[in-house]
Image (tube, one colour):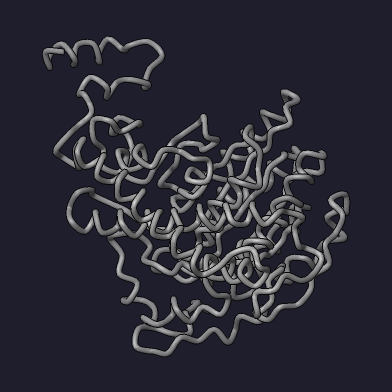
Length: 401
């Protein structure tokens, strides 16, 4: 019997020697019509466009303008600044719970920019960048985190479990494993109605060990669902390393092979590669060729959540030792080398973002933080039943409402 164990623990030096696909190596880009049986080696490579020197090379370079990359850089920076400030707010006791997407900002922002307005994202709790990239008001995000009287969800969700249908952001679930099943079902319904919209679902590496993962892949394959199935392999499922989900024996992307679904493993910290792989999978889905399983190979640089201390289960230096770098730094360096950005522009942008995010937080604090300002009590029954239940009516009368 083999019980998977991480190579290093607190007090050890970080060791990424077993990650074989770190150096840049060109990977051929197949046609979207290529049958899945001809793509069985694809999951065992790592799709990258940025070399170790942050220069773009290979077949997967997306044909996008520098303005798109600059916008992605801006939204990713907003996401990071927002996360940093709100985590400090949580430590001050102004909200009950928070988590950040540090190191994974590309996986919220880039899908939002790459997909269409009619498409639907079924996110994990680290995809706030999707909303930020679609200009969802920061004030609304903070109000939801504070669960105050202006909370757009009226206090019915935990902080950071956002929901914004009009922004293509399906209600977030703390049970992350449900995301694939929901996204496949939504995509099947769209296909049944003859609509061109596609879905993208996200789960973490740990959720690939759950039955819901395999059920969703079965339905996606059998019904040829127009869906992108994204696994964020950030190396850690809360305090459990990815080997528990069998990444010791194969890649997560390779799990699509048994279902006849193409699998792609992409450097999740390479913004250009993420754009290109998403575009390939989306075009494939819209053309009627079905689902694609994408493993976004990245690293969770921060804690799992505000109630987690990663120094208890991994070396403290591990986040800064990740061989594939930081997504914001890599995109910034690429743009500077391409003559499309500068250090001064980046500094000015970052300062402006800090000011804008701080202003949104101040506005939300004026409305009220956790426990200081609550949604109306009567709103607890809104959006629950299509017609008021008699019990709810009686309960409201007892409350004098």
